[in-house]
Length: 232
Image (cartoon, rainbow, N blue to C red; front, side, top):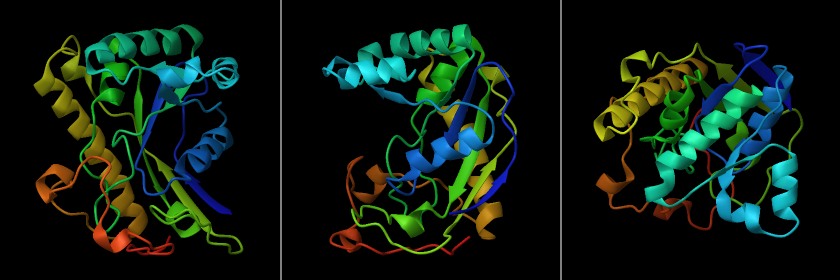
């Protein structure tokens, strides 16, 4: 791959990288990008994976962070994760969308509040990040890699999102929604700069388009190389 990386991460201390999500290969590429920026990449993984014999040991030893999928335990999981990050001075990659974007042109869609909750639990900075080009290697929903020489991967890390106005309001649903929207707004702005295009005025909401969180577009079923956006 040919890398184009802009922006910086802190040289020490805890941080959160919040990228957009267009391809299932994104985590590998974002992990490499964070490493190239001088920090060790870590991810939040479902707590049930930590109970799998062997896999759980690997996840714990590599510093991955368990997170509860149970809504009732979300706050506690966010607090525990934030405390671990702050105590050890680690960084973590959290995808605010929670899954591959459903937006037809691969723009970011509405986010979930996990990144905001973790950040506000221990005053950890959130670095909005845009990635573009992974979809040329593994298109959305595809299981077949597109082989080619020197595919360009563009990663732009922005300035930390200012969430100060939400301090002490982690248990407020409206505050978490607003904080998440700020994060998604900054991610979208960075991606506009990479693509040289304007994103839709409103973040895509799968529910408003008759989709579940894990639904697919009819035109994506059975395809392996669809790429609806411009290249980097």
